[in-house]
Image 1 (cartoon, rainbow, N blue to C red):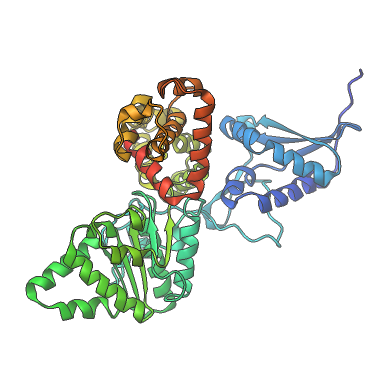
Image 2: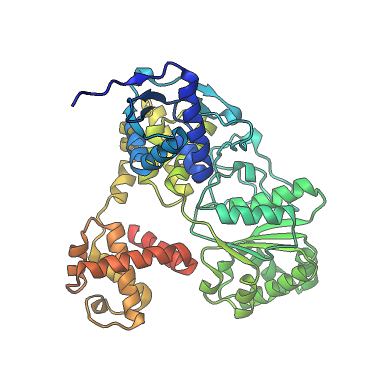
Length: 498
């Protein structure tokens, strides 16, 4: 059978238009963070005819990691969209761009970089907000400048509010991990005292909870400079209660907290076991809600998971809106790393950012720590930032990350967490109190080890691989819908990674 001759489009506008329209369709279909990371930076594709067989769209991708990821995750959808627009079959041909042929980089708004010839949205499309990094996540004491930020650009408001102006909505990387919490926080900043009161934000350390509540305070203060706003860590409230208890000056305590328009309080789990503190916070809570002031709290767990805190409080914590902040997904971690490197006046190569993001998954703070090590190693050794340099700079961290986690360790950790016997992991018992933790252990074994389904089944009392598959699918699906289960899995994963 003779080979079909391929006719290249000589009209570049025709080629660019197909790609442009395809990108616009993908921008509408894909989550913004994914589109901005994987599709938007691609150069304009070349389109060539293959006779009656259709057309070939050739895209040159700058590095192997990105090529493999787009091919596995998006190639099928890209081909379908382009075929629909072209009205005939379109095959996607992805090739690795030669290093010397990489598109030149041009600066765009927000000091970000974009390849010359990359897809640029038509005016009707909403502009993409440049991604920037939440600086140092949580737990920053009042007055501390964000790590790595330049001192002149960060100011701290007077002690009346204790807000850190470096932590705003403009300096927070948006993504799937914080989407719901960020949206709720924006609503509160725009209309305090109305919807979502109280707002309860929970999640692990270093995920940006503190950043988010400071952002609300800063936004409200910019809109209403005379607003009475106070940010504090739960420990500071405890200290105030102790001090006023010793002096018997509770009227002063009430005057300080009951007159606020917005109270931002971090880490309410620290109230555990402190009855007088809980009593005073309950009084402040009730007084503020009665006058339509807003309260935003953060915690490391959801309200019903708080230990040694009066039920009157936890029920009120849960009466407004409770939202979680998750560990950042891959695209979000890459955006954080590249923006943070920009703040350090350093250009981090994309392939290095992906390498670090794949290996550092826990939280924003660990990402920043990894980046600091790489930058320091590069400066001290006077070498360019490459994957090899990053691997050398992070060798201690990577050796811990890559440590093999055994199924036996997973079984013990899950059994301890849910207070069952390790022997129940292998037994034929099927009450929910045992079957549920067993399924969770199977799920974690599949996610965190290299064992096959039959191997996992054998380690769980000789169970069939279909039993393991059912457990993995069931727990994975429930994790997406059940915040309580997701929080428990997150705690177990962090414990196992140790």
